Amino acid sequence: DQQVKQNSPSLSVQEGRISILNCDYTNSMFDYFLWYKKYPAEGPTFLISISSIKDKNEDGRFTVFLNKSAKHLSLHIVPSQPGDSAVYFCAASEDAGGTSYGKLTFGQGTILTVHP
Amino acid sequence: NAGVTQTPKFQVLKTGQSMTLQCAQDMNHEYMSWYRQDPGMGLRLIHYSVGAGITDQGEVPNGYNVSRSTTEDFPLRLLSAAPSQTSVYFCASSSFLAGDVGELFFGEGSRLTVL
Image (tube, rainbow over all chains, first blue to last red; front, side, top):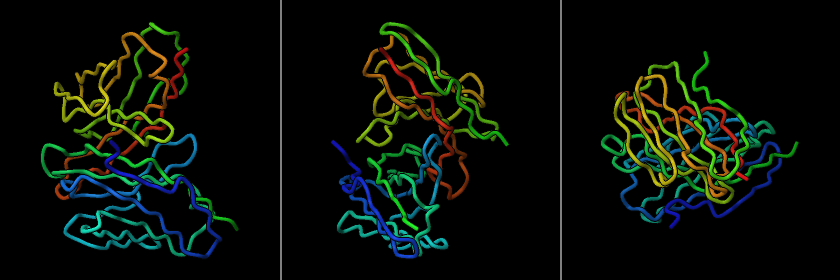
């Protein structure tokens, strides 16, 4: 049972345009959400996160939106750059400050390709 | 700044063989964990540790053992490898900072093939 789902295996975008990556979850106990980026032959690297008490968090070109009622989050990249081409993983954690610390549930990943 | 170091990067085993994937971090992180990545499945938690001498199971622990004798090291042992354990394995670590949750630092991965 996949508790975190990224239903789009891939996304192709032109340089300078907006990239929108989507993620859905089913576990209502999740209270912290993260996005990781992964290049080939490297480990995932942390990108941006959001707590369930917020609905938006912004960091430079990256913005994460959380819709708790729909159990949906999205990552917006504006403007997209060729160097953003990578696999993006959505992840979630429950009871983040307690016993579930660091126990992340990941989605399947979305391959983003940004064309020059 | 080494961060999280995994060895070996590649390994081929025959069914029934045993091996240990090594993981070391130099950031004095309390929390360490092992994930496996399979096509279409994302990353799944195998085992984790919140400090030396303390380990616990994740989502997919069967067939794997871990121990944490020091803060720096968290080896993952396969006692009798099976083809279903063919995967890419990632070790990760994190620190219990106030307000800091789940920001894991990952190693580069170890690709294991079991024939």
